[in-house]
Image 1 (cartoon, helix red, strand yellow):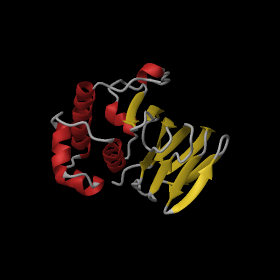
Image 2 (image 1 turned 90 degrees about the vertical axis):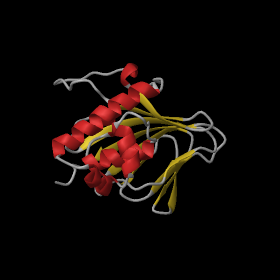
Image 3 (image 1 turned 45 degrees about the vertical axis):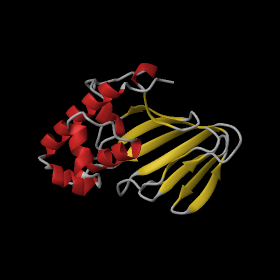
Image 4 (image 1 turned 60 degrees about the vertical axis):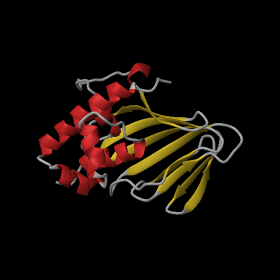
Length: 194
């Protein structure tokens, strides 16, 4: 698994990307606040490279623009064929017991898809927020039993099983077992509204 991005590098990349995306769309900070639900203070701090927002905030910003989270933290150009390795993966979530959420890669918008690798240690959970309308997620469990809660309904997803759902509903991933849970997640991000 890739190491976490150094905080100063991530802050600079986020600042440039956020400013660029707003400029491309002609959006004011107030328009981005309205579309993302992220406070103006947080957005100003991100654009000034003074903040490293959590994954939920990054997801809300990415949803507002209709881009994958990787677009916010990636500075490389997109060739016709892009082969990436562990060095380009970004660990964007770290759990209190050592779990990780690592974004491996993503396709470009519109209808971008993000590929994630998750490890949840016993007692860890992540999520809760609904994504933009039409966002979809799919998880495939490799090891352990994942407790997936979507819109208040709990589902147990075991090894070799796959779950697909509308990520525009509130959802949470949890490890309620005694061992680790390893799973792969794909997030399909819809185009931003015009």
